[in-house]
Length: 505
Image (cartoon, rainbow, N blue to C red):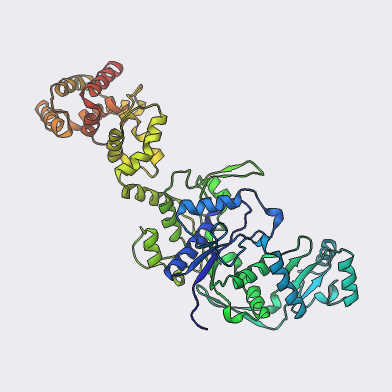
């Protein structure tokens, strides 16, 4: 087979919010396409009209826009192989359904849900296949005229793929190698339903991948059991020479490692499983999103990329461009990847450290303003510089940093008990006098003078500094004391100290 242009696709169903596992699948498709100078196609698989959820498609598109994962063609992106929405391709699918019927590779089945249920009760582990199709109501057991009459009378039917037993199907998987399956265990899958005149996923995805010239199908492990059927369909159409290569990605597992990651796990342990906040139009339930929880898109991408793929080096921090260069789909794990959400928080922390004080200050400024504080960008940037290494999310800064902007109105009981000694009021009164006499109130201006005073008085440095912190902060947190007092300035520092001395005694 000659070298083909690499073309991959991400094809979600608009049935609700995009699961984080779907985001990872799209990311791996993106990395593979970019690495090979290929195209990433965005297709909407909306053949199941009953499960359609308004707003889901827009939500999916917005998610990828936020994450920086760009598509080359497809729904809302244009391209010459459309339409890219399956509900707009009915006529195309019907043509290929008829082709399989004419070739005797598929057949029409009229069995009602009640009849199928009766068979399931009658035959243990019943499946519609070569062993049972002869006892059912279909075009293999009915005459041509009976079939014609049933259709003309408006009886609903499905078209089933006719799978011949005794064959071995080979699925060449880029991650798992040669996967072999006996056709004897496969059932005659439904390919088309007359009720809505739409194909099932199996037929639609094969026809679309073929017509859109998809070279590689990279999808979740849950599709591996369907892969033999898809291979057989390629053969049935005579498309084996252009059949895409397959890669079935490992599942994302619960943080504990057992079972597939679900929204309930996120609710239980307090982390998002969706890229953006999702408002369910049916249940009106609101689910948290990575964006609204304060994650950076690049941190989410970095975190997801390493769930199920290992670069083979110690490197953990990757930009999207670096991921494109380093990604190797053959190095994806065969087994599921534990969803270590705490590692996701670690990545966000690392990205906070990577970003400039200025960038973080821009994000922190609205939070400061929302708390009724009118201050300059310069002062916010100063605070960020001192404190950003202590948080995983920008919104955590306020709880840690509010004392820079608001004087304490009370003093933490536990800290007071531990740090405010019987002599602390006297020491703080003396320290206030020392500070009042300092002209240069910078860190460099304060520190040597105060240290000299502590030494001359033979005071314990820990006692002085702990009490000093309590007077300015109200509890035992924050950066170096002279950083705090320099930021507050002489007047505010002395006001806070005198108020604390008066209150704590």
